[in-house]
Length: 113
Image 1 (cartoon, helix red, strand yellow):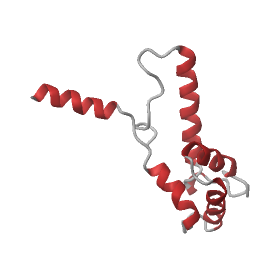
Image 2 (cartoon, helix red, strand yellow; image 1 turned 90 degrees about the vertical axis):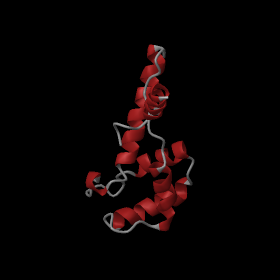
Image 3 (tube, one colour; image 1 turned 135 degrees about the horizontal axis):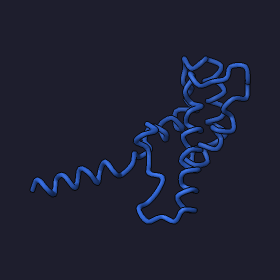
Image 4 (cartoon, helix red, strand yellow; image 1 turned 30 degrees about the vertical axis):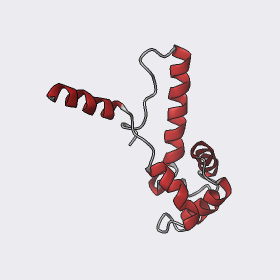
């Protein structure tokens, strides 16, 4: 997903804009990574809490509800996805990939016609 998610620069973006986009992109990737049980630090009971809250802010999902769901999710060691967390997971699952794929398809269709 990391390879296909968003773009970090526009063709003519200023260097500062590109740097900000890249930082936001990397932050988003790191926030989403805590949802994967393979990435959990089981020795830290607060692992991922800040990232889940930040992800909720970015995706406009109820932070308190998702945090409670994430706590239950960690308690089940990732075996059970609580209802409180499903909105967050749905928001993550429906993020748009880079529009480069769409542009490539349109470009190819124009040349075929």
